[in-house]
Image (cartoon, rainbow, N blue to C red; front, side, top):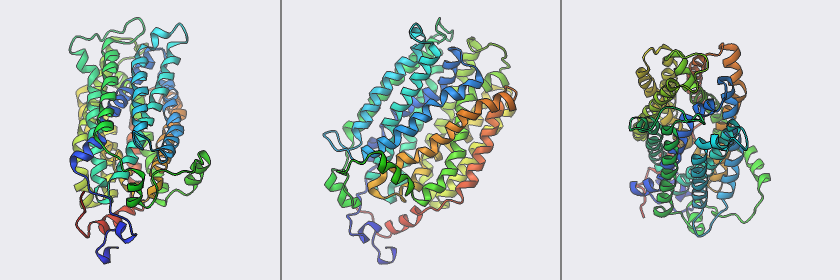
Length: 468
């Protein structure tokens, strides 16, 4: 307790979790760079790929919905079983590696769905690949969140999640910039017979390779605490011999901490907004800024608009990468909740400002605010949450927390297309404006969250941190 001059862990009779070096935190999180290269390619290009295969604008949210639906199922299961895994590779690493191999395969197949159209319509094959891709991303991603909480004391978790967010930003910059980078180096913008341009296809090939390499860095150069050592730090065995499966997941869901329940509303507004941005940005820019209309989805101009959107996404991810480095100091100065709230407001203003753009290059300016929000979204909710979770349940609760990410996306998937078609008269730009207002609602909501971790940090930092 703070009054005794002891860290909270020591007060409970536990060995304090060792403080890690920046290099250890970096290698532990490096695989996230590869994951985010894949995510950036998916987020920036899925809509235009599906449009090239024949999807209408109002149908896009429904085709995107397979990703959060799969995530809602996969992440809690992966979290549950990664809490109970220990083999020669480790505890979380088997899931990193499996997810990377499956993701790389899906990244290669998605832009080639048209060539398989003799089996099924290209649109359905593409939608299936999006589902497989997202499931694979989740297999690789969820254990990374738990690994930070496994290996870092409370006093370093903001730093750990911020380094992770910085690497996420770098990976997303690479993935977002690849299509336009390749188009400027001779790869064709003109769609081939299947509707996909060479710059998109080869961007996905490169992304698949980077994904696997980045995961291998984490697998080979980071460590995990064996079960006995983990128990000394956290007070519970890293590997539970009771395999209760889904029944235990439901019990844990009912017992979720107060902080997690309160963060649910924040996450709903946040992820509803980002889903709209990813799904509708290309068509919003194509129609509102470029002035395209009619059957424009297989034109070079549409691909140019798509490239500008993915390049703008690279801007918000680059801003996110830099801002992530400032988050620990900012959170220390004004608090975690206020840091997250101000960042979300910046994102909301950025999205709303897109409505007023007449020159596509101003899209990059709008994305600065989105980048501030994205950096915070990828770190602060997990920082706030991680200190409220029982140590032996880190994996499962990080997976359950994914419900609050997937549920708003599923809701948007069911309603977003109908809203655009019937309320916005088929103009996707208004979905972007709505997303901005939802982001501001998330900022207001986070101010009412109970942050138990703020007290724990004060307890942990009363004495000098221990090192290896």
